[in-house]
Image 1 (cartoon, rainbow, N blue to C red):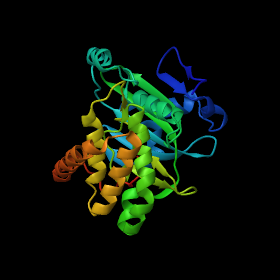
Image 2: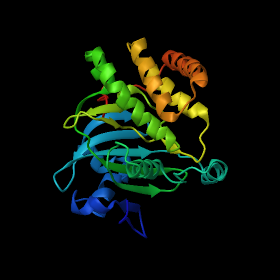
Image 3: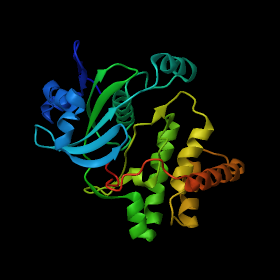
Image 4: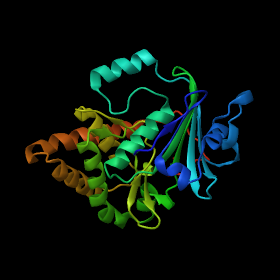
Length: 283
């Protein structure tokens, strides 16, 4: 996406080309969301809370242009500059050093550029420093009534319908050198108007020139760990994924064993932070 603008003094603010004209966003609005005076969460306090975790809150707001957006505000320590630069030199990530908000914005921008179904990235802003930043990322709201996990819990037979589309989405993501790192079915939503699948919660997504297989297995294992997902749906998804990735038939049993082992490990994991007010798919 082109047309980025960035302030030279004070908080770092960057807007996508469409953010001003189509959404009515500007630096004043973003700085209001970023305000940390007195430890307050600034303008995000007036939004509808979708998720709250230590150091992070995600809200739904109406932008100045009258359209709904999702704002994710993060506060707290990030990786040190030295570590981030070292990682970049070793693995060559697509998304370079920066605050979590900047990294998520750049991930969304890169994935949108690849034609993957993700929320439209609109803006990001940061104050503080790299070691302890406060940042926000603003993205278009994806209207939806339920996540794919909720859909399959309500209508298990729909697994056969969505398995090919989900396999295509994940195969395209991985083929481009990207992995999600939190690829659970609750982070895939069914868009209301089109019924297509849209991928959310890309804060930890990474892109590399040559990702290790373990990252792909982790993504696939997270999907396969969903309670209530029947064996036929898992097999259909994995077969479609392997076909699209060109994985040789003789190697597929090894992939399946690794994915199912990872799924069992994930299923035993108890989340460290759980917000009972979280609206699934609102990340």
